[in-house]
Length: 441
Image 1: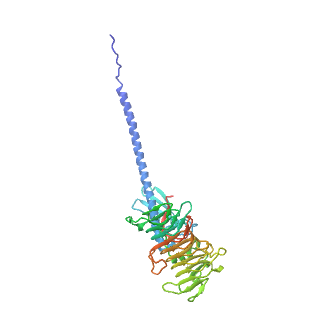
Image 2: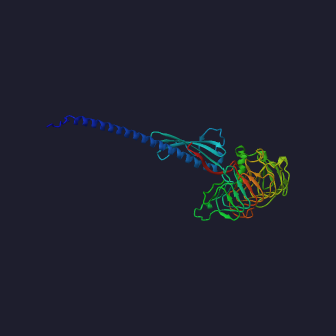
């Protein structure tokens, strides 16, 4: 009979216990090391986050200050991009914020009504620093071929086109009505005056309406530029190069009292009632004077940008394909184009990408031989009909209708056989609300 032999395990427990203590000790040391580094990481993260938000606060503070300066002291804003960054008026260096740290901001011009801002935030805990950059601007760039701040009606055989399906859109911040044989190579949108409870969709009334980009109900409200002829003139005179304006001797001011001045306010002549200058006949009136162009020729010295205090009416057919009328028309009242002018842009005479700019309404009727090229901007409403072709975009600010103005309603209208092409390439010196173009560069 054989007996099973058992190994002798005496003396094994102690080495195993020691090994376990070593492993536990190593794990404890590792955990302590990780915990210590996590504290440091968390501390660094806290300081960096504080500095980050301080820099962001500096950008927001600058946005508010620039907005105030734009509306109250525009001349204090930098306009020359060649100048180095400078402090923002009203914001001190190392501006503290709630004990978390401070920020310092500087800005410089980066183009027409555009500023580049650099904000540096410094945390109070350890002095961690973060830099944030932004570009902000009041320059207005439209993504719509036709945009109105109120109701908009498009009918007849209107045709709106664009390049690569971009910017051939129509937008109404009020109610939009489409009819006739309208074709829009983009989208058609309405914002219902910002009322989310407005149940009325875009109205399509009979005919054969074709909107390739679809119809958008309850779209976001689009910001529009403020159309202010007097302010526009002031900017043209004080910053002609930045505004894309002609030389001051080609900026002609037709005053309500009959005086005719150049852009430097030098008196050219004073017209009596029914007197004329460069084809414009002056009629004194209350509350607005009347300026009427009723001629088929334009003298070479009469090309230029005209600022007319009162209503401006063109009933002749000035210009030709060989010798076009090189002009931009700015009126404090209505602009009424009844004739068939042949108008062409020219940097020596006209405002960049700007055709008609009015303090009240704009009405265009007729059949120009080579169409119109440039932006059409009305402080109140616009009414386009006839057989015109246009390149650029049309904007109606939709200020309350003035009784007796050309469009006697709070409605913007496009009808007849109107063709409009907008390629996103117009850069008129229009001013919109201040906004961020980029953030965190």
